[in-house]
Length: 434
Image (cartoon, rainbow, N blue to C red; front, side, top):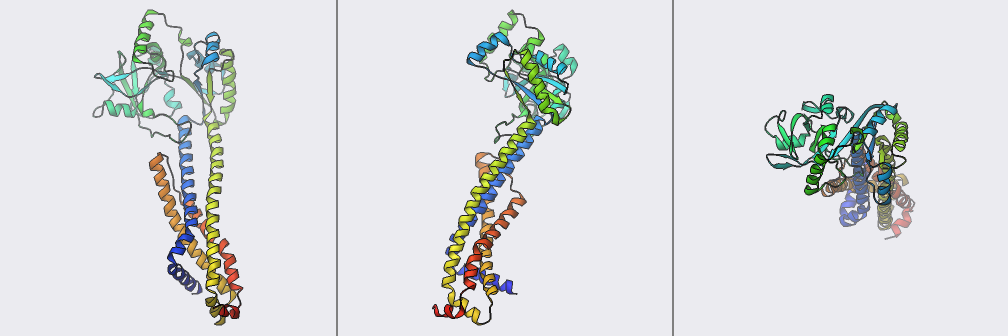
């Protein structure tokens, strides 16, 4: 009953001074709101990061072609004129003992169209193992097979978005898609996969927009895609030049990347060292490639995320401390204003513990209401940030509970000293104060 009476008195005191109470609670409101919004941004970034790593694969090492400029580009013409090549993939398959699958990937410049209408898409050449290493589920049909690669067959597999855009009301299997001036038969369609990216520095492209060809077909028919798409006139010139000149041997043809799947995710760093040694020898020490280890990227991003969370927690803590100081100041002023009330209560039998309890309950009520309003503010901020900046945010139950606990702790900590000051007032002196 004493607690109920103290709560009732606390609410009555807040209601009697509504504006003062609201201004006092602002620090707590913004502190709790900032905690929830920052934690939700961090949780959203962490979710996207983990999803990206899942798509990249924690058990793979990726070797990417690197664009060179200036003096390094001139040096590349002497040492490694073709950059990353199909032969590099063969060498890695032979020499890297950690490799389970070695998958060459060649992004090419090719405009896709149907009925003379261009199809927004990216075109890649690869091998059958790509669908296993990248864990791409098929919706219908099949992926590229070994026979397609050997025969440089004119077949293709469509991403879900491409299929939906081109063949919305019928099956795509057996249909024809034109790439530049040549027709390709559709043999499969990939299942839709949620696109992940936006807030991360290694955000992925949307695979639903991709078209896949046998790697030999891609290298035979189209120029490799080098960062910027070639203008139409350059593409036409390249096709004419290809018809007049002999193509280099298959193993000397450039590719975009190589994906190496290892037996165990813990072997990725060791595999990367072996890959680096093999490519350094083949490229005569020229670093016209870069190695990416998704599992290592995840660890680095998680460490950076922890630092970010610590900084955000420190900033939010400052807001809560400022709010707590405001509460303590107001309550110290209230002790002086309510000295007569304290004296009367002491005279009719209230103990010092009762006075301390009363003021602590009032502080808890103030911070509790401020905490609830702060939760609403934090959730609103998280939603606004998600909508405006297109960042994924996740408001967790844990962050809400922690925020309420922190708000309550702030009330107890900063309300304790005013409560002790109130209990220390002598009844006679309190009555004389008026």
